[in-house]
Length: 504
Image (cartoon, rainbow, N blue to C red; front, side, top):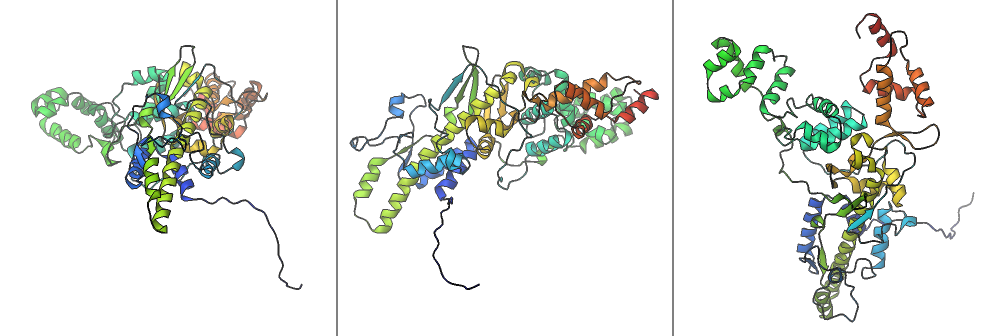
């Protein structure tokens, strides 16, 4: 085949990840504390940016005033974040990024209502959802925290959606020393969960590493460590019940309380002092930062839910256009002019990006509340199956955008403070094509069926599948087996043998 030069015309689309676009992506996934630090850095570096010191509830006319070319009397003026004040290219790029760089979704983030609040009365119903396929962005390298360490163990220990939800809430309540300071009764009431369920999850967590974590007081912490070492006999338990005598140095009092001689008591003292009274300190040595909610959820007068952004966590910036006009009018070389133009464009871009971030958080939070209305009204047992795709489809965004929004963002509700990602649970499709079933509800039903067995009628996994499909649950045998194993339930052969032997 002969080789010869020729001209060809091809058309293709390509996205260039400009520094501004990378900034927009970064802002969306930052926590409110990280965002505040980033904005503070930009205020120091950019001469055209100023912090908006006006109250968050200042009149909307002042806060949303549009700038026109004729309005040159104002020394400082806030950028109109919904007009053409910012370059059109910047607006298009941000919108495209929030749709996972999908130009067909451009503009889907623009909220029609004031982005600070959203009110609705009735929750909408979502369609069948698939297995959770959330995409997690790469995290910055950091020392593992106690919370992260416990969360990893929680996801290994159970796949039950209800237990994961309760466990995540309990882990958030554990302080740096490793202690759970809230009572389980209060947690049960806040979550609308049975106390027995909360106690079961708490027992699960107290078996995690480091040993003693999740204890509610020093006595329980030491007891957990002694049980792990198989050293918590009745004598040692009596010692723990009177441990305040150790602090007083009352050796004779400990001897009387434990009915042990002096040598044994001294040995127990040595064992106690070898334990770790604050096991949590082995992890996360960084500074403690209080969690501030990004969103508030309150009961509205009409029986629905009112969702508001926390204005205290929203950095507000002003673009000093008069100063830009003065600097631009001055004589300068091309390098200086380029610097001024870039800084002014960056200032406008940051203002636009902050507004888009706030609107997106509100849209995602509002849809989560709609989808999980049952939880807010009745408690954890009414969590619905939910994944990123369901939320993304409902608000016309991409799953990666929802993933970024739900990371490190918190929602303050009448039931407590929750990270947005808590509300995503797995689901199982319905045989009738109707609404999907929560995986947690299916596990509960499997437990019910097995608890009702008799020695003459032990249910095989295939039989359980048949029963569940008859009840409208589209489930495979391998899924039943997996759920049974996560519930620590033996196979049908083992259960039948145990019943015959009178073990259960």
